Length: 398
Image 1: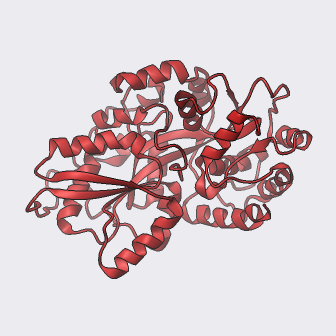
Image 2: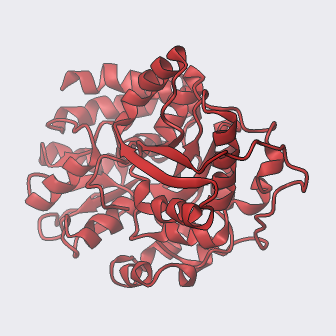
Image 3: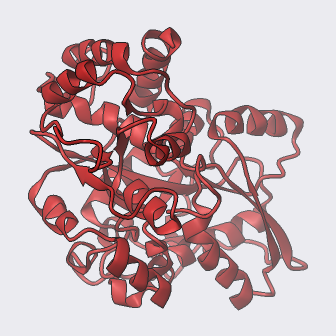
């Protein structure tokens, strides 16, 4: 989810959602896993975050180092923009000097990485190092996991959106359908906003949700199946002042009053209100025909890491998928609910996470998640094609 586009501190909830299914197991799929050379000395591991995921996963990653001082001396964390990662890794791989060992990424980075062949193909070769993913993942997470082709792995998941977030003191005629939103935008030019989809989870979720709202012929085929969606985006474009390069700007403009309605997701609703970026009393709404389009963050290993590092990184990946570590993913609502695997209840989360959800969570989310379809996002190639078409035909006009 280019979800690193917020303050570095950002991004839970219903036990009924995250406790679905059979008891999770985190045991490796086979007791005979491929042997890797043990590091001669504890390793320094470089972690690059291009999705804002450290907010959720850093505690689990650092816990691994604390529990395995013979394997890891420390983790070095860096953050950067998603669009620059592929070129950076390709240059390092061509030079034979990869200095990024572990990547935290959203669907955008996974898609670009698959398209350009920069990730280690972990499955099926190293399946014995990992749990049975189909058994442990929540159904929505498993649907998205299959899209990663065994080269990236979901560490946190959420139904996402698309949701509308609005200032109730300024919006008295809240639209209740996609058509009504367009009418509202004509009457209030410049007051609705979403960010560039390639850099914004809420932006791309809004765009990917429109085919369901509008009844397009193939919601998973943006080039040949989105006739109504592209026409709608071009029409509503007339009443949008500009498209920020990240979600954070939309939140700030909503709070400051220059926008009255913005596209959001569950996590981008809860966490900014927790941080005080958006007023606590702002509201969210859905549109008629609403389907959730789910989102996730992933971990991936770049090609070119050494064998001794690869073995440790696979152990780290399996560790992150344990229930105790998944409980960290509730965080402060950054991904709502957050955990990607079954049977991780909010009661397992740290107390500050539980306190956050009691105050800033929304009771209506339980019914919205239970009563509406949850769809996967676009697969990797269609997503890249959608980004390109949106940039050329919509974003370029601003």
